[in-house]
Image (cartoon, rainbow, N blue to C red; front, side, top):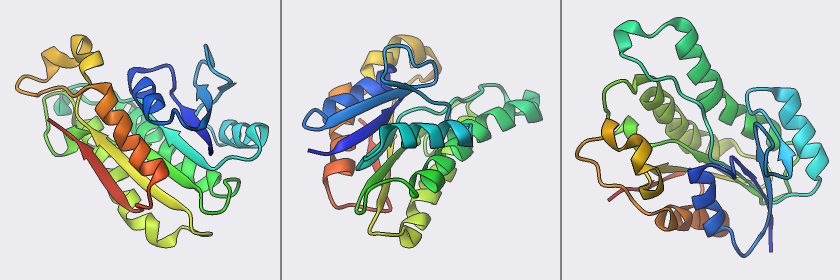
Length: 202
């Protein structure tokens, strides 16, 4: 049994990940901290360090959060871009950059990207761009990870459980059940893959 830090545990994607981590001791965290063991803001280096220090020993980190602004490209402000970049991209990069100092040998990081970088939709240019950046980061940084650490990304399409919220934005997409996405998180944490983008699409 591993100790896994799951960030974003209360969200739909977090619940899907939780389903794939049932054999482990899961320590939960979120930005609000509501209903979780810890409070963490992935955009804040000190917040990440505090989380890792408070948890102590851990074998894996699974992240399911990354805030994105949605707007047409011609209307996107620099602040909207930076909000997305600092959360979905730099927040996750810093999670690994800082987390590798604290995680156990042979531990693993699992990040979240998303299908919109390969199947774009209107209004989602910032989400698509940062998802693509995370996929590239994972493929490349795997060669530089110390102490036999592993890193992968889950790139899912929309969840069935979230279709009521996102369905109107994604005509022609087929949602997938959270249980299937949970299996992808299980592969990332319990397998031997590293530097992989695990796609979950219909």
